[in-house]
Image (tube, rainbow, N blue to C red; front, side, top):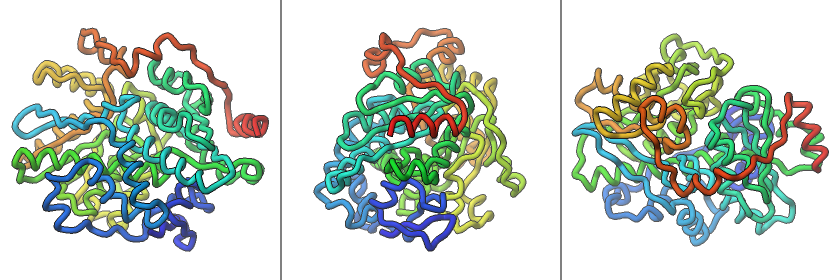
Length: 434
């Protein structure tokens, strides 16, 4: 498989090169040159496949010959080591729970796959890889968990000061070992911009071998297509034969982009809904055809507080940059915190379901689309366990959440972090550590 830069198609790379580099030298995102539909035999017999068989078949063409099949099977097995239950709410709607992994967020899948891929590539390399990751909440924790103790790697996590939940911050700052946390005086977009700028900094590249673990990295982005297949497999086992709509709470748009890849691979998803909070660059684009990102605003669904989603350019490429094709298969709606709290209560009162704020936004987008398209069956992604947003969930619902084992063990730990502001301070921090 050849990958090319969406900024300059002449800049190409193999899967391993794209993973290690993170971004192309021109700062463009890597994109696969071809996406071949999976075989009819595989798709028709999806219900009988194991999760590992699904993951290997999905990723086989994307890794090419850079990872042997036996090693790919091991990486996928280590990645898909937890369940992705589909929880029915009524006759035409369900939640896909993606929070049963080690950090209780959907990003455990991409984080684990990428970490193990880089670990394999490092067996053929002598130089250490430094992974830079910007997080609005859950990415950093998943990447830290995935990379903890991986030989030949160090991870530096940048997160916006005061804009992640207390539990999310503990997941970022209490790992030790090869994981470092940097608290940035700013918003997520500042953190993301600092990471992208570092990749092109000649001084840093002279002393570091830098890569990214955000969804801009193909090894973080593409494996997220696994659980779209796993969700559909569960529907097949229930005898499903209808029009499937999937609503994805969307911040940097990597997750829904992976779902569209699954569709291109042959998964019969009728329509996608990108549900956002008030950071609404994409919903506004679909209304106006003008893409005008704005500074991000803080919300109770903080993992989606992204003003300029990096992966939207990939989504446009998947639709051949056709606005009409995008509109036919893709909708996007924005909701504020008040609406999100109402949705949390509605899910709890009507269905006995406790969602997190991101899942509640996904539910709202799905409900809005299905209100206009009642002949569909809908799934919204529940991307993180409610405990990670304990304050807002407990306050809204008037309940006390149980604390899962994955969270309990970090509550008494003390955060270890470096605080700074601006790219110059971040560069100085890195050079001092070199």
